[in-house]
Image (tube, rainbow, N blue to C red; front, top):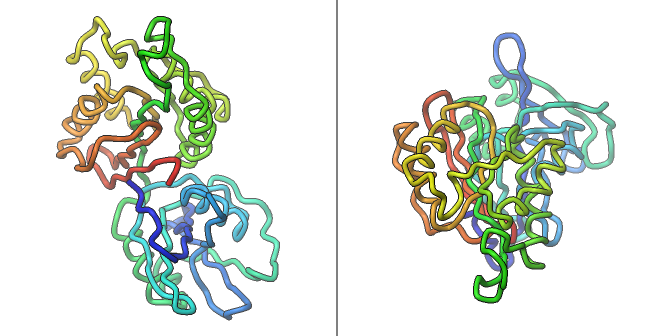
Length: 298
């Protein structure tokens, strides 16, 4: 799960923003006149803002780039005026760039090959982050496993369990998840047939302008059985297409294990996903490049 901020910790996020170029990727650096430095695009989280949303927003504000987030990179930790600060980073592919407009916070933008960018960066901590980006795969494909949001208690619902809707908390989390999950650029949204799963990804599908693919085998109590569910989860991991899969607490471990087995890796450790939380596998060809977990409330 994404780390919760420590007491008094300043949270910020950004990305190693890159675009394809002849001879290898170019990365974006920004110049801040206040500090007269060259650094990676980043900025502080607003109150209540998730770090994924911070990363996408700050990159757009400082560079004009709309990015799709790839694998997560190591955070930078340092002190500002005696307070601890943590900056979370991702690889961020520039999908679209508006005209750069110099401002009081950022007055210049440079696109440079990795080696030239490393030489221009002012801070060694940024050089370390850039080096981690360069040492791994530039392009990865996200396979995202999501537990449905809160739907109240089964005993308090008088209808069929498959029709049990999200409660108010679950509906709010579904709306928030749409923005967070869209940061990874999913092209497919696959769901259990249960309404609580479908409703969890309905705002995401609406935001992306796509449809929800119902997979009966991912539904708890499905007549298809665990073997069929595992085969279909593995097939989605093999497809090499960005996907979000919404399922249940009972079968999430099975689906995750099936995808990891297809990639030849051990499933990532950690506690079970909470309601509305998700796990991202960043796939590089037929290998697993990185994993991360998030809760929309953290």
